[in-house]
Length: 251
Image (cartoon, rainbow, N blue to C red; front, side):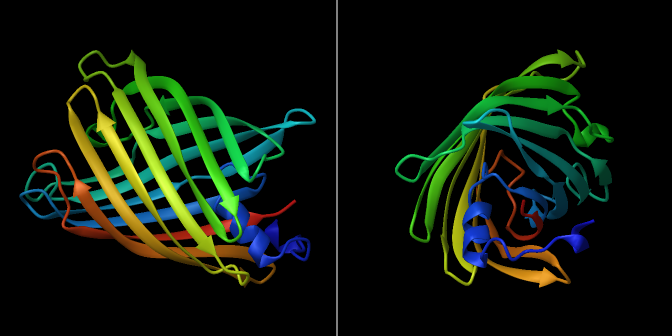
């Protein structure tokens, strides 16, 4: 599959710049692992592996559609109660960004629909709701810098009547600086506002990144600590860390 690809077409600097852009015309398959400790009164822990492939599709001479799915695989201990363990899939989020192929003054943007799909396999890991809403991203790239923000708003439209409705905003400002070697420093903030419950969750994650090869397969590696700046009562974590492996498939 990937081992037959040749990666002489784009430099590490160019690939790193594209990876800093969530709607770049680049097929990538990230595996993002988040491990969080000291959650709630029972000091529980949670591991979330997000499988989140990104596939751009050319739909016209001037426009791309970038499809992106986030499918979480969760294992948690001592969260719902002392001694309790839950493990399985959580709900998937599918986004479709329609984006012009050519940026103007280094500014790139995309917008489209976002869908919540109740793929969770454990009652504690799913909303049991289908949801839909708008999503958008805007960013600027200049020199080695990339900075911007991604956002979505999801409302539930169907699903289990015995579960609360979903009315949730997600906001993710980010920045990255990449050197010509492909190495980078960056940070992202992830804020989730639950309008139904009037609660806010905020994570701040500074990271370091780099590019390498496994055989002929180009790979990006990212790692950094996670700081839980805000959370609903009884759900705040003491700390966490993030590690990401991204398999890259240049055209």
